[in-house]
Amino acid sequence: MSQSLRPGFSPAGTEALADINRSVVATGQVLPVVTLADGTRVQTGTVATLLRTVAAYDAAVAASAAPAMLEDLESRLAAAVPTLLHIGMFDLFSPAEWQAGSSAGRRWVGDVAAALLTEAAE
Image 1 (cartoon, helix red, strand yellow):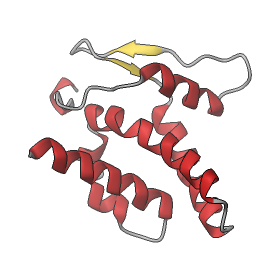
Image 2: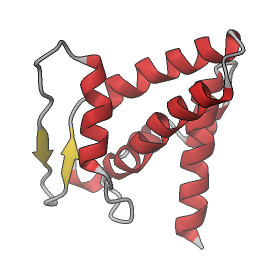
Image 3: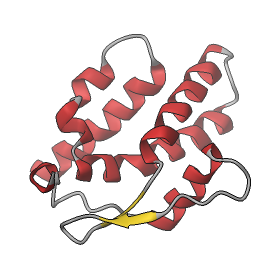
């Protein structure tokens, strides 16, 4: 697994991500931070939270939600991307695959991942 880790995308904001990820578990439950083989600490629950937030974003777009609601959901989605880049999620499903299709949330995540990868390549 350590070969799929992307050294340039060290997870930032693990504590903030923990607060976001806590929204998918029952009250009182805590998702642990784990240490990967490369020594990087990552927040568990990130993929589950991302999937639920994509669904919420899609529903908000369909309902023509207020810009403030979309911005909140976008900040939650963006917080997950560095961790997902680091663990290789976008090697498994490329940003272009996230950008394809009718899901506004998936497209948004793909756009953020593509931008970070482009920025890192420069």
